[in-house]
Image (cartoon, rainbow, N blue to C red; front, side, top):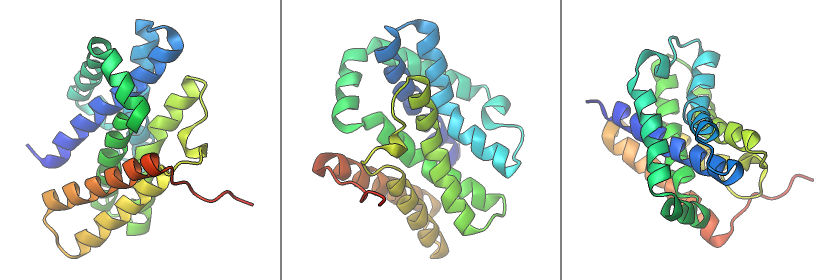
Length: 201
């Protein structure tokens, strides 16, 4: 089984958990609302990317395993809600894992479709952040890209690192792991040390 596929399934699970946790706080754990927000969070960024790139059918439409992954994420959230919610608040754990995986997947897919590396880096970042933007909008929260913390910048940095290592023919699996860990490290340090992007104006 290709590592890209494994990472995409894992990313779908963790983003579903992230969306379900956010919805659980707002909706009083209403099952339909939680599941819907988990679903949109998990498939939102990748679906918008594929539509912009003209890549059809959409991944989750073509492979029912992604639906199962979303359901698994929602069930995991419900079973371990208290523990997961604690870690989500402290380290944005599931956002961090999700954006790392989806950035690299989105970047590689765009390259494979024949687009310029600059477009690939942008689409990698887009894939990672748009699910969270949709989640925050649905739960009436300030979208994370409008907060002062480092978020999309970490994704863009990881996408660029992936493209650089790809040019040096670094083994694909190693590149996935190195670039993903780079994003996770930047994001966790940004949360821990309260790093932020300077304000505009």
